[in-house]
Amino acid sequence: DIQMTQSPSSLSASVGDRVTITCRASQDIINYLAWYQQKPGKVPKLLISGASTLQSGVPSRFSGSGSGTDFTLTISSLQPEDVATYYCQKYNGAPQTFGQGTKVEIK
Amino acid sequence: QVQMVQSGAEVKQPGSSVKVSCKASGGSLSTYSVSWVRQAPGQGLEWMGRIIPTIRLVNYAQSFQGRVTITADRSTSTAYMELNNLTFDDTAVYYCARGGFSSGPLDPWGQGTLVTVSS
Image (cartoon, rainbow over all chains, first blue to last red; front, side, top):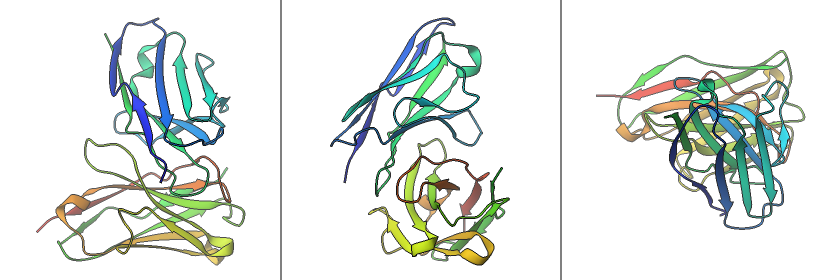
């Protein structure tokens, strides 16, 4: 099975900072990669699919890039409402494994 | 706009089973799959398995194989997840989510069902 590894597991940054989260697949997944945001006590929310396609209504400060095995989620200017845990997921075939998550906090 | 509506919270004894339902309200599952995702307290998201109702294809994560059964009723656009031989470690929120027919991100998600295993 393909493993998904996220880094870092947590980070603390200031409002306005650029934040980058990486996700690495153990095998080529082309661009079958999604990013989800989960705020405390809430249901996960799809942010990005196809590695780089922003979902409707998601602020443009979020962006995704990468293909093959290496992917990145970037928040260009961190806002207080972005405090959440972010997960990547590969969704081609099965199993559709999640990364272990990255907890983003405000410094 | 389809919504995934799950059944309510459950309290179960160790060794018993739980069956959680997930109805696609306002839409059908004819061209989609339904995945089940578990989140233990303070932990990350764990994909359990999925069903493609139209072709009755089911895939399970290796860690749940043999203990979980995912089914679907196409006539009511409802999917089910049954987990057997519960232990305290199965205490978690269980989510369903709609996915693509063969591949696709998970959206939308159900509201989650808390299953508590307690003696």
